[in-house]
Amino acid sequence: YYAIRWPTDGYDPHAAATGRGRALFYDTAASEVETRYERRWDEESQTPFYVYEEGGSPYQTWYDDAESLGYKYDLVLERDIQGIGIWALGYDGTRPELWEAIETHFTLEENPPCPAETTARIAHRPDLLLPLRAFRDERLARMPGGNAWIGEYYRLAPRIERLLADHPALRWEAVGLLPDVAAMARSLLAGKGDAFDLFAFHRATRFLDDLIGATTDPELQRFFRKAGRLLRDFRASHD
Image (cartoon, rainbow, N blue to C red; front, side, top):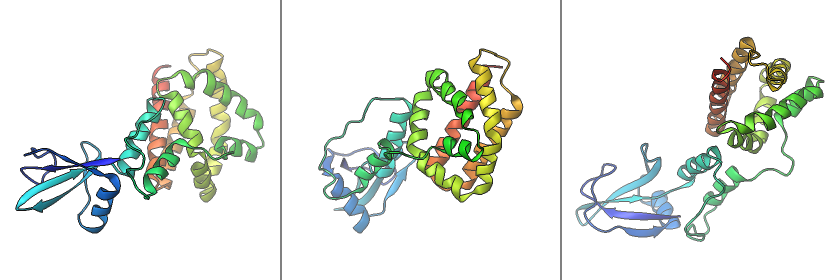
């Protein structure tokens, strides 16, 4: 929640420091970006910075904001790390965006809508949820990154629900896909190694591509791409 302002030998990212850095609170850095300087983005470190000149010499200020912290929080969830640390609370002053980033990544609605449950209800097939839940607990949760994906699914469930509600064709695509996915989950749980139905796999990957194309939410897009990678990894383990 703080920035470091460096005297440097140039304005490009990663220019050499020519002296000691000076710490600034986050609210000071954020205010300077809003009122005085242009926010820049370093793709390599996934962090923002800004540059300026003082006394004829270049300076660079590097810091974390809601976007860069969001990428770090994504990594925490992906690696199933058991928490985050911040130095120090209060350095953001009265600004709300860093707290909102924490809320977005680490809190759930009291009873968030579950897209799978809604889809099964529309299909009049609540029984299809049983093999999916068993697969979640007995297989997916034991895969690398599986627990993180499950946590993200429930955290993003309200947004996924809204996406499906706004795109009825996608909802009906999910309704049509659900029996195949449930049957595949049931067979795999029974230990049938040859049960990875390629037709269902291709339908599922196409559905994920359709979801990515239907949303402009970058977090949902990353989640659906991650789901596709998990699906491909699981297929590879059963080839």
